Length: 147
Image 1 (cartoon, rainbow, N blue to C red):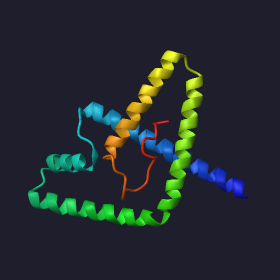
Image 2 (cartoon, rainbow, N blue to C red):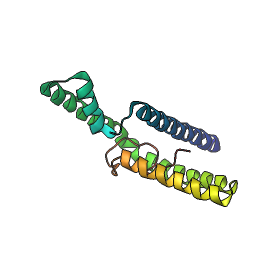
Image 3 (cartoon, rainbow, N blue to C red):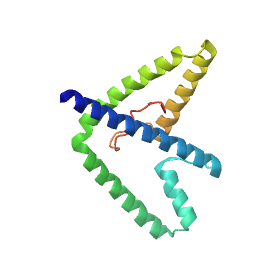
Image 4 (spheres, one colour):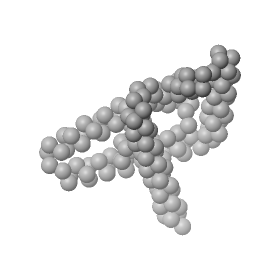
């Protein structure tokens, strides 16, 4: 019974990571299509203000609501954060193992290029997260590659 719970947990974690990777990829595709360089919550708020032509009062009210939403979400995740942190470490191990297995299938030139791709994905993810994940809802571990 305990083993099946472990498998179920790993399946859910895999689905979570896969969903994150798909979302990450879709976001990059949409940004490339629309020529956007701005990213992150501030960029989203700025884009919203520009596209909706918000007044300064509307923008301040919306910013306040978004901050309130963020605090509420952080509060929701607080009780399970230790478990999610533990899962994130396991997910990193799975990711590292998968990376190593993929590298074994590649020639030396491809291995170097794969490592560069992974490093770029790590860097972009860290930038998207603002370099600080404290107080944010959990997601894939910082630096998790897109696979």
